Image (cartoon, rainbow, N blue to C red; front, side, top):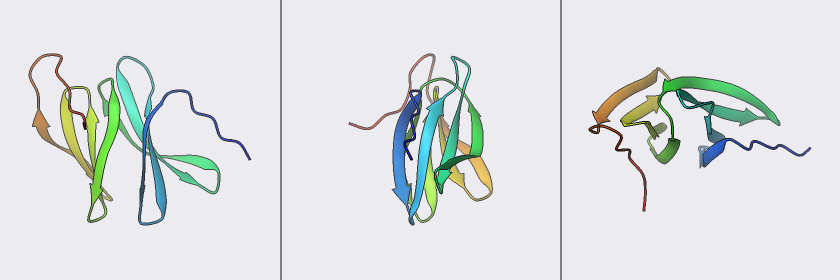
Length: 91
C-alpha cells in the first residue's frame, strides 16, 4: 500500500507509533497518527507551518504558527508564543 500526503511537514516515530504533521491550509494544521495504513486525526491546531519538533516521555513538542505546544494523550497545551510572524523550528 502506498500512502501519499503532499501537505505533510514532519514525521516522528515514538513508542512504535508514527505521527505526522499536516498543514491543512493557511489557517490550521493537524497532527495525525498512521495506524495500519490509515490516518487517524489526533488534534487540530490553529496556525500555519506545523512541525513535530521532538518527542519525550510519550509527549510531542509541536510548533503551529507562532505557538509551541506540548501534545499528550490529553490533548495539546500551549507552552510558549513567539511575537508576530515568528515560528519555532529545529536546526
